[in-house]
Length: 354
Image (spheres, rainbow, N blue to C red):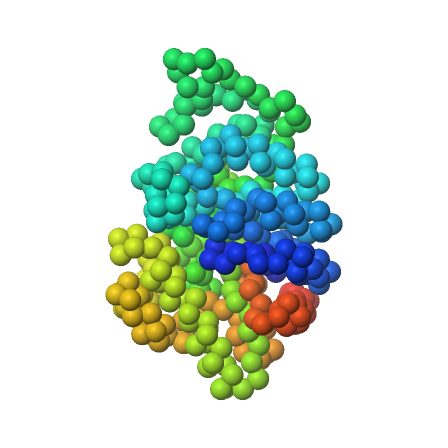
């Protein structure tokens, strides 16, 4: 069954009105949204808004999409997970991501080198900590306790929470394989459903290497939702959504490191990705946005009338995607909730066909 999720706050925009955000979350829960995600980049952290929403909701799952590996020690992440699990009554999902060197080195002052290997150790330490056992680890990046000092192997003083779901946001092949090996769920982005196997095959490889099944891993990808009634509105919507695609291609990294750009290139848009990136980094932002193919903006979003959006939802269902994180279009909370309710009705109808 295909489920829907939303985000409150995001990687590039802050929550401005927490009371309004609470209303949005509560109404989304009534509509039937499965999960609410919060993120962190260099605005607000992922946990504080999620803890606030925990007290405003009752059923919906609450996840970090994402907590940055490198922003806190793995033991601190484990403490946070144990706290949030109790606070939410077991509704908490711990989503991790490496972010990128611009954030990790520029904002946190931590080397970004070998992010996949670091993430592996990070998750292994987190899992040991939440298991309730004395915390020991001997890795390349983390050694617990530190040798030669006064530290000792500590165990959590509260109840263990070993079943906290851990999700990984991954784009590149090696990180996708790591997701298959270690994670309970996958947070996908810049995802074209027609090219799903470019992502799923690597997750499957990692899962099989660890003796797991791909079906053990819950999968999610993101998409904006914009309903239109005619060709003029449709093209205007694609042009507006191209702004976000251009930012991913050009602004979410440097010329040397842009994982979003590489992912679009692997999905058949290498020339377009390079062109947009160069224009963006040369300061030609309007030209970069105009260079994004409307076709691409349409493939990574849900745009059109009910029939068109429903057909895209069927595609996600048929490839085996478990959940879509949707960003409903609207200038006001009322308009966004109307869009959200409409796409939920279509999702329910698609599920009923199966």
